[in-house]
Image (cartoon, rainbow, N blue to C red; front, top):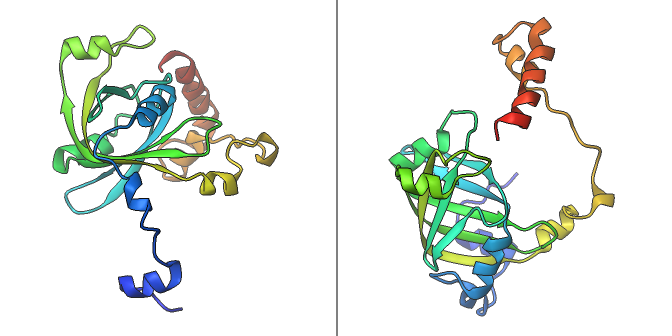
Length: 203
């Protein structure tokens, strides 16, 4: 197995990008980018901690929850979750982040890179209230680069083609926690029922 250790080796395998590709990179959202975000209900946020360890976190809400305050500034509300705050801690240590934004049924995705500041402001949290609850905080995302990514990966995956989907998988958090000794095996069912209840009441 030959490890790839330099760009020249990588380029021999992948080839060179078309000179036109660089023209799709923008420092601010275009009208198409703004329209896409207005329809976007789901994105993946990528952050990196002070040691260089990266992670990705799903973010989702009603379409348009990633609000474009202007063409270079996004406001993203934080909603209740598992309270591990891994991504938020990363942003305090290293504000650089990226977003991969999806619109169901659309093959293209929108990639956004920049820096994030966490904002604790009661009026702003109230402005982004959902389901009767204010945002916990708001991420202010300063855009540096944004561009659309082609649809090839989603087409290969059949992501929006129901006839290509496998049967839905039921994930048991109770089993995951019991495997590490966090709860007893006979408590798994009750734990999962509680999770299902929170899905209904604590979004």
